[in-house]
Length: 225
Image 1 (tube, rainbow, N blue to C red):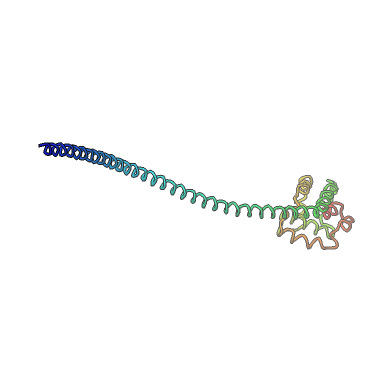
Image 2 (image 1 turned 60 degrees about the vertical axis):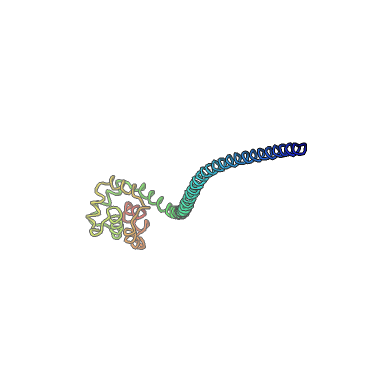
């Protein structure tokens, strides 16, 4: 009986040990399962979080791509505008250079023309009412004087056909008004057509102040004008 009791006692202790071991294993399994379940939940939550983050990243990437595209367009437009500005600047510089050249030419022409204009003004100042009245009172002009009045008809009246002495006298009929026209005449605005007609007359050796002075003081000053 003693051996049997010892066997039973050993069996009980072994059974308790096995039971405790089993309970420990069950507890570990339960803990492991709980951990796996929590981990699975965490993984699912993490996956949802990653999905949301992925959406945010894609949205930000799309916004960035759009911004880069807009920046590219703006840069292209800016470059195009700069090219236009460069072209316009070049045109402006060329225009300014041309204007400077024209200004220099005008200054040169004025320097050349100034003595002639001054002489013309002086010639008008030398004209007096009596000498003009005397000139237009001639029934027939002295030789060569008609050339002076022809030039005046072309320049003052723009005459193209009637260069008669009668027409010349009509031009000088109102002495003061005629003299005023001479004073206000803009030599710098003479049309090319008028210049081409009058210049050959000026080459006539009789068309000078000295030659005309002996015939008419007014004609002499008008020739000088």
